[in-house]
Length: 282
Image (tube, rainbow, N blue to C red):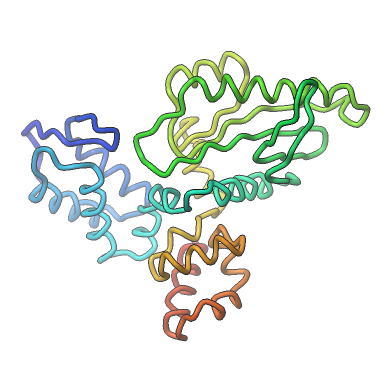
């Protein structure tokens, strides 16, 4: 593989520019599970193709296309971040997926719950309870890359949950409970948000935060791939799955019969099932 000596500036999703770093591309391919041979081939192709001013989105699309030619499972995993962006505008599928994440860890979960505080009532996205621990979760779903969760969000969420917890502690059934406040997003947090979370004991979960235990890591650990990661099914049918409450690939695989209701031919259905099986067995 060649070494890049030129200082090639590329454009990030936020509109900012930065120097292209081939090692970042290689790292993302490696994290998706690509072999070193494929990584080298794609890196060489990108090197020959890249020009100053190109966007990170264009680089991703090129790498994804090259990866798709070589490895079905890896190319699916490589588009994981984009799959989250394709979950629709409501944010509800994201909340359901986060609820699934807690359920995989043994918690009983509710989504879209209205809780009474000492002062007012609050609608919280996910309530996860196990033994005498309860997590109260606010989800902040974003459809565009480059957005950060600003400090105003954890400030606001912390205030709301404090009002809820203050009242819960007056009730006999919660006397020995430990409560935890969460802000969860499919994007990233501002540095002020991270510092505030550490200072106040808030649990923040972002795409790659905390390091090694971010949303991406947990999705892969618990096989919680969203149905929008699939490439063998149309966006219209993906939306039908989401409308039916089938948010994750495992949910869709467990409800295979639903695929008979969306007008797929037998060969099309076989392609979907193959993608699901290949993805979930890894």
